[in-house]
Image 1: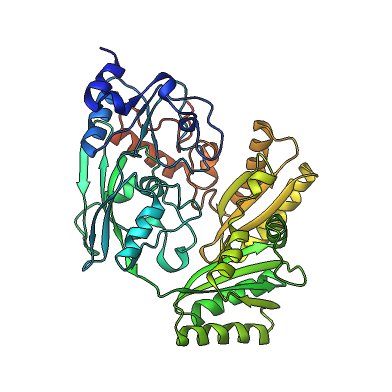
Image 2: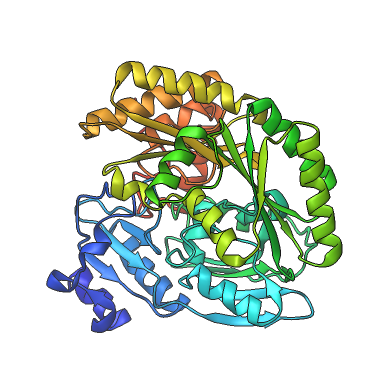
Length: 459
């Protein structure tokens, strides 16, 4: 029997797609850098089927690439030629919401927005939130430790995970669906799998922490004249707004490009920086505090102009510019970089990065935006003759500066293949060696997402 025969026997023919049944979407994540269709696409319906599939693949030394919603931007879900894709879309749904403990047990293939809506219907907030919420899946969010727009209040994804179930390369099901906030019993194994991009095991279920559901949110759009003012406004917001849930900054080029693309105009003049501030709660006390905060910021010349959204529609208009969904349409081949630096140095990096990139690519579009409260900066770069060589050169320029600034080459997008060869810009040789040892211990036959995260080991 072939490996495909074994997999069909274990999962059923309807859950093993080969030949023309493999859709084009399994070729690549949202980076559009994938070049190969997988040998087969597995669609297990339970953790036991995931275990059976991995046991078979491990026995045959067959590489397996886990795939979720395919919204990643680092090439982490891209199959190589001959790889098998393990897609978790059928392992979906909410198993339980514990209203007393404030937890949700959810399957890995569940779309994030579906889980958010289920939490909301139960009177809770699922604090994990990102722009791809309608397509991304919980398992992918966890395996990349996705960040998003609520980190300033609720932390990154790993901060909202209490328990986890994962399947190891040999088919062992490791289930620790802990629901307690305090559990100090030896090594915290869940953290091995969160952020490891499917290279150590396949996440199948998780227990997520829920928060009280806000009564609503107040949103303001602020124009500022300097990055020092942005930093001062952030400091003031942290101390003056107990319900602060988002603080997002856009540099002028990014804001103007996306506002023009949406045919939106907010201010009479352009400002070097535009900031979205959002606070949980819409009661009279919260509104009074928020309006007072904005008024004081204007009086102190921290904010040059400010708009307070008067409706959900106006709030969405602010956020539509920040999310920049039209950029990829207007700038085909857009390169999206995701870095982290000390907050005080983000603008210094942006100015240096823009200068070097424009010196090399004079016709390029270079713009910046990010979760400033979380030290996370996104860089959008488009060159007029995009190819793989140019993309690598853009990466090398930006990540070289990240190394100079002692930052991280990935704040929330993961490493995948696109950042793999730059991992040593942010992690020491000793750290990378320990990562390799962990990988060898949990996946000795190197079948789980090979070629991702860890750079090749040179003799």
